[in-house]
Each structure stands twice: as structure tokens, then as C-alpha cells.
Length: 220
Image (cartoon, rainbow, N blue to C red):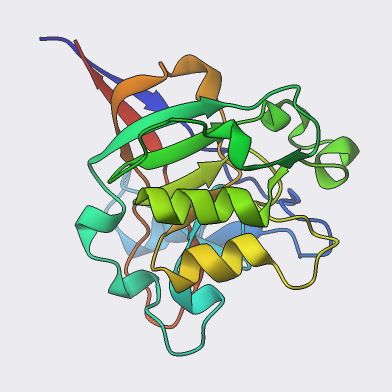
């Protein structure tokens, strides 16, 4: 059996914007190689980096605490909530901005990481990425919850319409304990089914969102 891993994450770079209005990450040295020379034996150097960023940077997972004050944070996720999930991709490119419940039709989502492929990641790091993005409607979200989805991801700016301050997709999915992964990429490289999905954050206490290295495992 041959195993193939498919990266579904955007790299995090100094100065990049993930979401308009949120600050870019500041990446630099805490200890540079040049600065480390006097600390170690001749010819031995180390680098220790530092990063300052908001939690909603790059490809990230939302925990229920992101929306609901007394719910679990990213440290509270059991590993089986964000790792080694059976995955499926729902193709949603070219269907207009709102993606409603008809998108899922008779799709079996029970126990699965449902990844919505809109193709919006083609606009990453451009002004177009932050405006007019595809999103899931309330009835689409309700269909996923009623269908028993384990996790929902999307390759767009936001799973919600950012003009809707009530954020129904976040409110309902996270209220049901279903993790959300936003700003995915490369979903076109995945089959519609037959893969395992991973989006594991470090267990940082008190964070409702955090960057992940999302990827899929294909065995065959």
C-alpha cells in the first residue's frame, strides 16, 4: 500500500494578511545565528525565532470557545475530533456566493470531515480574497449538523457571510461541538472521498482558534 499526504494549508509568512482588519504576523529572531556564536563552541550556531500573531492566521481551526464563552478551547479538543477523520469533499465552485443545503443533497456526512471546495483559495494574498467570498447559509449548516458531520472546512475567507453579524454557521456548528477549519487550500488535489483528514492545533489553553497544518492522507 502506498500512502500519499496532501498539504491543505497556507504557509504563514511575515507581514501576510489572512483576514482584512486583523494584523499580520510579525516573524523574526529572538536569537539569530550570528548572535548565538558567542554562546556555543566554535562553528556551532542555533536559531531561535519568535512570532507575534493573532490566533486567526493562515489556515486555522475554530473551537467552540471561539463563539461560546463556556465551551471548550483548542486545548480541549480530543485528538479524534481533529485527526484521522474520514473525509469527503463537496464541490461548490461556480455556484454563487451562498452555498445552501442543496449543495449536500444526499451526501453522507455522518462522522466525516466535510471539506467545501469553492476554489476561492485561488485569490489568496490578493485584495479579491477579502471580498465577495463564498459561504454556507444557515440551512446548509443545519443540514450538516443534522447529518452528523464531525468537522467542517472551507477554502474561503469565512464559513459565514461576513455581512451577517449573527454568524449563523459559526454559532450553530460550534454550538454543536463541530470544529470549523477555514482558509484551506489545494482541495482540488483531493478525491471526493477515500481519505483521512487532519487539522491539529497545539494545545494552547484559552484560545478559541489557532493555526493548523491541515493535510489529508490517501492510502492506495
